[in-house]
Image (cartoon, rainbow, N blue to C red; front, side, top):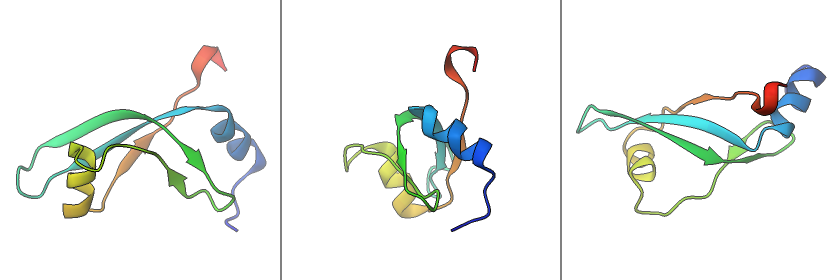
Length: 75
C-alpha cells in the first residue's frame, strides 16, 4: 500500500465525484467529464461509463488520464 496520509484518504473517500481529463492522440483534443468513482485501498480509482463513450475511446488510444478532486459542501 502507498504511503498516503490518512487525511488525504479520508478526503477522497468522502468525495463521490471526480473530474477526469483525457486526450485523443488522433483528434488532439482534450475531453473533460465529471464521473462518480470508487477507489480501492491502494488508491486505484474506478468509474463506470458506457464502453462507447468518448473518454473510453480516448483512454484506449492514450492511457494518460488526469483527475481533479474537490470538496463538496465546503469541506
